[in-house]
Amino acid sequence: MLNAISNIIKRGKFICLVSYLFVSHCWAIPDDELSRLFTEANEVRSQNPLKFIEVIEELNRHEQHMSKQQKYHLKYLRAYSLSFKGQFNEALKIYKQLLNSEAGEQIKLKANLSIVNTYAISKNWPDGLSHLSSALNSLPTIADNSLNERAFAIAAIFYNQLGQYKLGLSYAQKLDKLTDDKRTLCFAKQLALESQFKLGQLSEDSPQIAQGLQACQQSNEVVMESAIYSYLAELYLDNNQPLQAIATLEKQLESLTATKYAPALARYYSLLAHAHHKNSNQPESESYALKTLEQSKGIGSNKPSVTAYNILFQIAESRGEHQQALAYHQEYAAADKAYLDEVKTKHLAFQLAQHQATEQKNQIKLLDDQNRLLRLEQKLSRSETENNRLFISLLTVSILLLAGMVYKSRTTQKRLKLLAEYDALTKVHNRGHFTQQALNAIDYCSKNQQAASCILFDLDKFKSINDTYGHATGDWVLKQVAQVCQAHSRKSDLFARLGGEEFCIFLPSCDVNTAAQLAEEYRKLIAAIDSNGSGFEFAISASFGVTDFSLSGTNLDKMIADSDHAMYVSKKTGRNRVTIFSDGIAEFKRNKQANSAMGSQTTEARV
Image 1 (tube, rainbow, N blue to C red):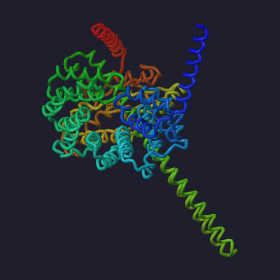
Image 2 (tube, one colour):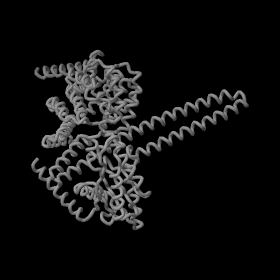
Image 3 (cartoon, helix red, strand yellow):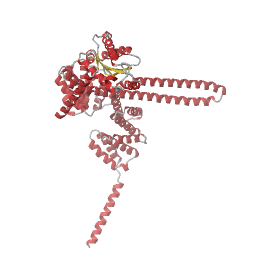
Image 4 (spheres, rainbow, N blue to C red):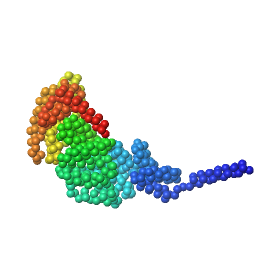
């Protein structure tokens, strides 16, 4: 009896289980519920990551009941989730699959914009530009205003990051006109102000600043509001008003600190360090400079770090802490070089993208011309005489067209070569090209047992000239120095601007004594420059360091480093003079490096 009852119960359970599976399989989620889930996923994806993951899991359970386009949409959301987790390579593969699929234009635009964001994070500027161009070209087919707003915002951010502020401004203004959302309006005005600030279109009393602050205060966007205050503070600093800059920054400092957003805090602290330094408040300046370095960890090359190391170097030097000053100066030089290298990389990426776009247009034009030629040939086949006449004419046009395109292409290549090899301001070799040429010269001199020397010089008190008379005057000084030195150099000498106000001359077939005499002539020429041409009157001088193969060997980096230490001695012994590298300087250098290393270990132990 019990066995019979048990069998009935088991059969009942089996029937219930089969019924449950059948009902579960056949039940389909309503379309309006699916639409609601997709809408919710789009709304919470950046604001509430945990909720976003829950919605994705819910959508995954109903994938078999989705339409083809809904499945593509789900695929995009999965890729977005991977990006949010930092799995960028996997996300990129899915985004690119969507671009090559039958997904709708809106999904493809979202994928393209996500690719642009990913490439911006990885600093892959050429590929980012390519996908951004594709995304912007697809906008005329998109009716969704929110997607257009997102595209304009990403374009403005990307171009500002790339240093193409005119383009960034144009898309920020488009976003401003299109949106009626308070948060997006704050975002648009902050991006526009960033572009206008970098383009030199703002002053302390520009009405756009007050409008931007009001928009961000209404939407409670602390980070965006703080960015606008930083532009205003920097304008005060440019006009030598450090107290106003400090007051402006401190007004927002507490709110910004609460966000713990490192990039914005690094910029704020560096500006406060600069302002206090201008106001001769060394303790506060040093404190904020150190805070800047702490916030800049993990950000990569950035301007706040360059500013902080430069200020710490100046403070240590003013205290007579020469070992610490040298350590900070080395960090400053490395940070400045990394920052400038990144700027050059961005500029070259944009120039390359423009060149490729021009080439594509030329190719399209050539194909159009060829198609036009074929159509004309078909028409002209009716008459042999007329055909011959027009054929010759078309051939001539084609040759001229091709010649024009070849000429234009070569001109573009020459321009790109100039950008890659020469400093845009002074028209002398840039560091990269100088290094390549100097290594070739060292190889030649070494093989032929010839001497070679290196002269390194740095303009004295150049920052003071910039701060007192403006960056335009500083640029004038750099160009004048480059012109007089280049005119006096030998044909075989390699003359380059290494960065900032630092120049280097490599002299093949020249011993150290001859190089020192030439350096003295350069020093006199620089000191003789008449500053009245800039509209101001001030003294111009430079400190020189000289070495050669016999003192530093044939390693270019060592020659430059030894020349730099000799130049540092010139700076420390009164400026406007020439110093030849010696064993004494080398010993001094080694002692300072050892002391610097011990100082670093002590600092780490304290931390």
